[in-house]
Length: 316
Image (cartoon, rainbow, N blue to C red; front, side, top):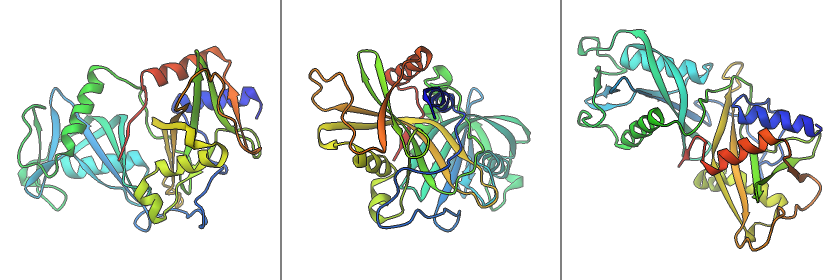
């Protein structure tokens, strides 16, 4: 992939459109990357926040919560969200944007959406079933009690903040096949309004991909471990500060036993003691290089995303 191809790939990822996962640059040591299967080695959860001047909540066996539940094999992320909302709240819905991704290692990931109702009838106690007892609209500052868990308070606040001032563009899952839990890195180094992006060279030049492992260490450390592993393979990290800023886009298909996901993430690499260091850190080996982004629009987009943290948060 020439510079024009890299520019196109970067533009696609920054625009939330995604790219097919053809191969990967870093995998877990001591194990072959495992194809992921829902209900076997991964669990994905979808959760919806509705703002209609107020917020939608559901009853969960005597305690209130947001419409949420586990994805089923064969579903896309959006299909799972719509099914859960219909079962638990009685509403048809469309997601507006991904708000947050939460993880407990690569085997448990939750996708939080801001959504809006498009039809249906709000579930009442007369329609109580195994999914929920009822649903209702409540003022954001006066939620019902008891809550099943207080993590929803942060999520409702996050939705309200986004509604008031959107920090990132609207992002929805792209239906692209993937058999692994992996991350595509937009790993950046900046200096005086100049941006470099780390590029993999095996095959055609590309934005590097790291596969998440299911070892106990990677489970405990979370998905950031796969990012650090790839960077450690090509950079000397002891004098560098590495930060995953957040998510640029999400890829998943869910059909034909393709239960994997690809998280397109924005990562910063910086010297711990910058001094007069205006060039990116030296790359070891021949499998990676730093690409200086000279296309003005792409450079402007990257700087804006970095300076304003215009990404979807990834929380652990």
